[in-house]
Image (cartoon, rainbow, N blue to C red):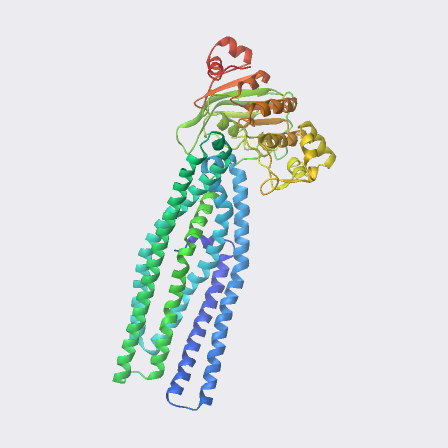
Length: 577
């Protein structure tokens, strides 16, 4: 029902104390309005003059107004804290995603990450706004009312005290059932999000292969599964709401019967009996209010748990072993990996016995079949993955480091994946991602070197044209050229990590792009993972990866003469020309 981690949020403990005090005052206002409304009704029952009931009705109106104002005040106090908390959570999530790197996104799924970072935080905001105030009200107001009822007549108070935990126990049982259904619904929601993103990405390929209509059935099944999971949650919600209304109404009716017998035998007068009867619904009201919003907050609770789980993921420490300034990679610089290994979640090693020696401005190609570990190796070299502790050593310029998630190292390389990310910004701002202070002339020169000039001339606002999500569409080849323009613009980064940059491009686009990429490789240390073997002719050294191991390495000439795994792979892929 209530995640204890909420109390660990900044400012939440202090706010909880304030809300509890306001709940006590609200409970007192409820008692005052019940008392003086009953006084007015009893006065009218006894046919007293209308003027005699004006004062109690005025006090009732004041108490009612104060009660409503207290609700407004509590929401006013809660909203800034919730707004700040969710804003901080969003920033922490984005920073965590940056620290975890692309490997986490690939492992978790893009749709899942988007759901957590965007819609998940919005659901957390709703969860915090609804659940905190209602839980505190449920914990405080009934006790204030119960104490006053006990002062009036202990028998009815004892009954209400006994029935309250029984109702809560029943609601907990239904709550666990609803939680289980909601958990499955949230998992289904994340699955549908991942499926939706994957479908959008693969739609052009599906259309080209003539599989789009067949795949529509798959989309239908996923959405239908989520619909059924949602209906299952709604059924439980309706059942619990009916059960709560039934038991609270029955309890109030029992109290009314007890009071009726008391009036008959003269053990209680009309005024206290009426006060108790009026207070009984308010005694159960916080519970009913909480229950009515409980199911609306389940997704928010799940989203909050998912955010907390992600923020608790370990990240690499000792990130300043090479200093906090960009690494000055030069012709005599060296990188050494000896017997390095890596595994996902302590499972079977994804990479093992890695031995790599890189020096100066060397071009190193990484080839292998799909699933051989090329991308994992690139992510390890980029510091996005942390090697298994106790396996091998890594040295940069002779200095031993525990991993390559070093501040200096990561400020010294460009990472160019299959699908470079384009921000919702102008073309100039996208090119100047690593050099935000660069002038338009420098940006234009970099764009020209990347082969973008002709395309830019067709844009309505040139370099100031908005691109990225929700703006002008960009083809795969153009996206890669924008990524290359970033490299041309920032000449201080001398290390390039390519993760199959032309994997999704057609042959003509790749051939044109290759002529643009080759000049970028000069005076850089290059790691180029690819399954297009014609790139290997441009490499100084080649690593052949198979099942997470480097099974062969050397210059292209040496590997060809050796007639081993490289030659076999080249033959399987149709040659190296």
